[in-house]
Every structure is written in C-alpha cells, then in structure tokens.
Length: 320
Ligand SMILES: NC(=O)c1ccc[n+]([C@@H]2O[C@H](COP(=O)([O-])OP(=O)(O)OC[C@H]3O[C@@H](n4cnc5c(N)ncnc54)[C@H](O)[C@@H]3O)[C@@H](O)[C@H]2O)c1
Image 1 (cartoon, helix red, strand yellow):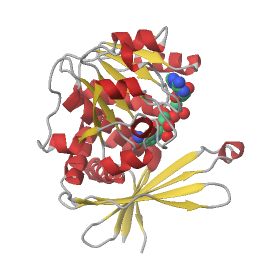
Image 2 (cartoon, rainbow, N blue to C red):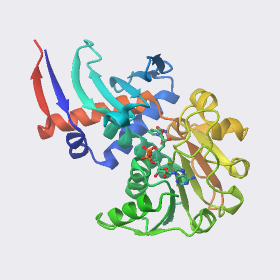
Image 3 (cartoon, rainbow, N blue to C red):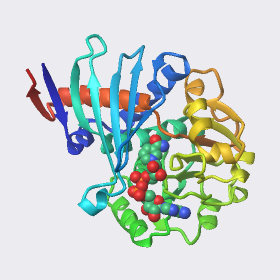
C-alpha cells in the first residue's frame, strides 16, 4: 500500500481555481440529484476543543474522502493555528487510502470555488465591481474565484482591521490581470457601487444594509456557520432570490437564512442540473449562501490528487 502526501504548496500548484470551480459544480449537481452520500458532520468533543469528521462519497464521479477539522481555542498560546484540517482520499472501489493532504488550503480552494460556481450561474455577465467583506483567507479565495468567471475591474475591500485590508489590496495588485483594489470608505459606499458582494468574515451581525444593494446585484455569503451568526441582513433576504448549497444544511446552520426567515428558492445544484433557472433578469438580486459541505472537499481533493499525480507533486510513501 502506498499513499501520496500533499502539502499546501503542492495543492496550490496542482489545481487552478477554474478547475476547482468545475469540480465543485459537479459535486453540487450530484448532491441535488440524490447521487451523493454525505452524513451530517459528526462532532467529537475533547477537553480542549472539537474535532469535526466530514465524509462524502459521490456516486457518479466516484470521489470519496474524509476531512478532519480540529478547532482548538488554546492553540495560539502554543504557537499553533486555532483551526487545522486534514483530508484523506480513499479509493471508492477498495476503500484503500490514496492520499493525505493539508486541509486548510484545500478548504480555501473549495470554498472559493463554491462562490465561483454561484457567480457563474447567478452574477450578471457584465459584472465588474466587487464589494469584498473580509480580508482573510476565505475573502481572498472568494475574489480569486469570481475573477475566474467574470471580468472584474475593481474591488472595494471592507474590513475593520485596516492593516489586513491594506495587505490584501497590496497583494491583489501583484496578481496577473489584477483589478484595481481599494479600501472602501464604508460598507454602504461599497455595496452601493457593487455588481457582486462577497461576504467572507467572522462577523456575527449583518455587514451592510440590504436596502443599499443595486438592482441586479449578486451576493455570496460564506462566513456565518451557526444559527446565531449573521453576515447578511433581512432586507437582503427580502429583496433577493435565495439559493443555497444544501437546504438541510442551510436551515440547520446558517443564521443568515434562519434569522432572516428566508424562503429558499433553489439549491445551486438544481440550477446546474437545469431543474431551476439561473439569473432570470438584469435587475434580479440573488443571494447564494454556502455553509460548506463535505462533497466539496471530496471532489476537490480527488481533482487535486489526479492533477498532482500527473504533475508528479508530493511525496509517495510506502505504507506496507
Ligand atoms: N462556508 C464555508 O465553506 C467556509 C469554509 C471555511 C471558513 N468559513 C468561514 O469563513 C469565515 C472567514 O474565514 P477566514 O479563514 O477568512 O477568517 P480570517 O480570520 O482569516 O478572516 C476574517 C476576516 O473578517 C474580518 N471581519 C470581521 N468582522 C468584519 C466586519 N464586520 N466587516 C468586515 N470584515 C470583518 C476580520 O477582520 C478578518 O480580516 C469564518 O467565519 C470561517 O468559519 C466558511
């Protein structure tokens, strides 16, 4: 038995964001068609934190993986990150392990890709201005994914931590085909100019007033992940057509959906499968909420592994 071990650098070198978007679209399509097995994530509490187990198997594409995510609040005192994830890819025919990969960069890639899928189906084709809430790992990935599907000319960054916002703006200016990146004067000013609003923060209360959204805007939210956390307000929910990654997960975990009493119009997989329409007019406001699903990890990890094998990335270890 042998296993390929892939680092964060290997993962980033293996798969482009466009390929990750295609992979995640395949996952959503199979999930909404009832062609995936994905139990609710199980939570394993220890004295110091919680470890989440996230398995998924996609029946059509055969992708099969388990992500293990630990959230341990005392880690920074030990010089370790609060959140650490690892992904084990398995052979669906034999159950044998194929690869072990660093999970945080994989999470950023597949979470960005979720936003990319949503923008592909829901953002206006001519969308060019982005309001980006948050300047962390996920915000960066959300922007990269939207840039893979729309010609973005300008990004207005909103983050109360100004140094982080400036660092991201400086970093964006080094990307090839970089949009103009500036710090927004206020949430209201950013939203009023935006064709696409991306929310990827650790905030627990709404980031902006949905009354300030222009007709035709697409909003993606990936930050809030408990029933009490909200990034997106009830005005946005009232004005928007609401699309989610999975109804059950959104109804159980997303404060944006629960507190805003959202009526969910579609799963994104239903839109990909042609069972529900994508954007319906130039003036429609759309909101996509993703809480993050194990099927995204499984397809993205399998795509990374395939690309890594072709490019001979990582370290192959003989286990027995
Ligand atoms: N949906 C998913 O699949 C998924 C996957 C991974 C992470 N997440 C979640 O996404 C969120 C962001 O993760 P991250 O790794 O980028 O975190 P991070 O800590 O790297 O960055 C979060 C940023 O949000 C900013 N922020 C906080 N309040 C804000 C506000 N009111 N307005 C604007 N910015 C604000 C912070 O200053 C920080 O820069 C977290 O809540 C995380 O749990 C979701």
